Image: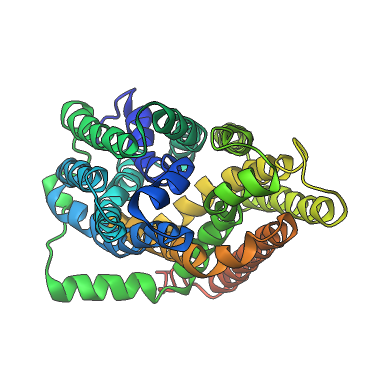
Length: 409
């Protein structure tokens, strides 16, 4: 098994943070982008959809490429391409060019998160893998709070284009850090060739596994209970709470505090509680937060801190459950962890893209509809987990493993 660097968690968290930084950093600049490029609010909103659609598509391939060529090479190339795409965004003279730049960003940004998950399972097993995943999420959790603050500061100092210049430098820095500090964790003898027929069979094995789909959906749906607030942040902060474009921290700081708290708790509970018990506790917290959010939004006007407290509590529960859910899904395919991580990311970002393009514009009209959206997402996530649990128990009783394959007696 490869030797882990003491800085591994920090580097993997930084690589995963490219995703939230790509979204949250430029949210405060939406009005300025619309004015500069003569674009409507909906056209600017679609830059998110362009990013997430290509992010979802390429998420299918980052892991498979890393299974073939190694983890380091895929990350280095992807971060370099992300930097180039960010420069396209910085130089865009029309909303169409910004859509193109954002689509190119989405094609490359997911490598850090997808391949990073595979790196963790290359290096660690069991409770240590959960601790490492929780540690990555703990550090990664800072990104959604820092990103809009950085974006707001850059917007005030140098205009909206400086946000994408910052992302260009961020991508280049991550490419260099990976080259300098990330060891290759997938030995050559364990690599899988990019044979079209073998790839097709492998993808079919993953996506035809009901257990995998249910676990991946549970992660994606839980995350979208919070993500609806990320995508609605310009409306929620400015219109509903009556704050300014530099006040996004009122939403993102409590959200990140909850995320970091849940990740810390997950790491502490690793090896003490079983994965299903940890996940169940996370769902209990999320359901309570969603219900409290609906009650507050239905009966009281939006106000601080009450309107953001449910988001903080929800994120605690989400981050408590997510490491265990993620590892359960990856462990279904131990020989294809990179591909499994890709498919898991594809499901998550696909749900994100549907939320961005179809669901969120219907929810941001009021705090109550946003609260209902949060509650519906976690209820659907719980349903997916319950169905997985029942199926796993049934298969265990008849000598079949969690992915649906027969177990030797």
